[in-house]
Image (cartoon, rainbow over all chains, first blue to last red; front, side, top):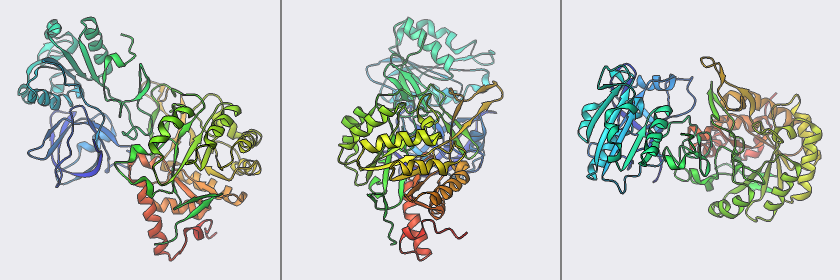
Length: 257
Length: 303
């Protein structure tokens, strides 16, 4: 897929809760094709303390409306600066980057998103729904503030929710949600979230012999496989998360689980 | 259009803009963004005799106006480069220069010998300045004696243009440059990254797995300019300047300080199309200042 560098126009900036917001972006030309799991490298223009681009996953694409949506959590000065963008501002992006989830050979799958790991799951859920694949969607977070866009997710699958404090859905870690008692029903597990969560799901998948793909987060410089900063250990040695990932099958990784 | 052609030893460049090793992959990563053939040349990733996995994660930390890296020369080794990577990039109509790294002098010689026979590779850049490997690397570049020894050894084995990349982590870079010139180098490139460090105060831990790493980006430009200026006065061979070049104006500053050519490094991460913008920007500068050849600008600082 051809990568592009271009300025997109900010159409909307919708605050979801204290730490999360969704940017709606468009362009005068049709947006390029993007796949679930792919990401963009975003230049942060309004903060001289931010030097590198920030990798942000594709949250949703509306080709009919020519809109790209990015769900972003404020975690530092780069994402804070992005949260201040207003309609009419321009955002310079290098995209689409990275690989995609494997959606082949499955009938019934589970998507698990924890915290800002929820971000790539909506576009994946929509994509699976379009292919007629049944999806159970499990969202988790510390509190109800971390559970985002649940009405959107409901359109594409059966929704399950866990919060650490019990303020929404089941109380407890996402990996303890009761839907996972039926883990044997799923052909594949797709996960994105904090590393401990991903490892817990990988262990669960391995124990139950379920195929499992995880989308990894990593600090990146270039995003296009040139700098070799964002590597993760795989059975084939160190591989760039930006080009060989961000999605990896857990069989490729060398996690001790 | 100004005359942008420059020469580094017997190596002719269509313009003074090269891409710095380790910041541009093998060039093909940038095919979607730019026409590589517009560049004066590309310097591919540091290549060693044996494959290297590089350092553990985390390898990178953002810093004010720059970044630290501790990649540690991850590469597939010279044989894979020659047999698998080079065939994929040899169609480029630009100079492909290989950055040669090693931990022993014999390794540098072996890599240089293998590259001698590759017709489409007109030059190597000897990396005696990598701060991110435990043995070799920067150790060769921080004393005149060892810089001289490795340069002499590779000079005997390599018959095309030999560029030696210098470390800024020294007391007197001009002395190292002179030692390298006396040992047969056709050119020196400088500066490699400055040794630096980042700490996470909350966790009380270093950010990088290696504790220290190489600092690059616009934060090092004043140091790089000063060193290029000093070295250009000390040696007769052409100097290639690099260190924090983000724009054509930055590139011109290095040329005024004495550089014959320049390398664009970390800027490629921010704007993958910046290198060709710098080519056109240098031309615009020359036209605006009525300079017919960019060669007339080298070392023309008024001071």
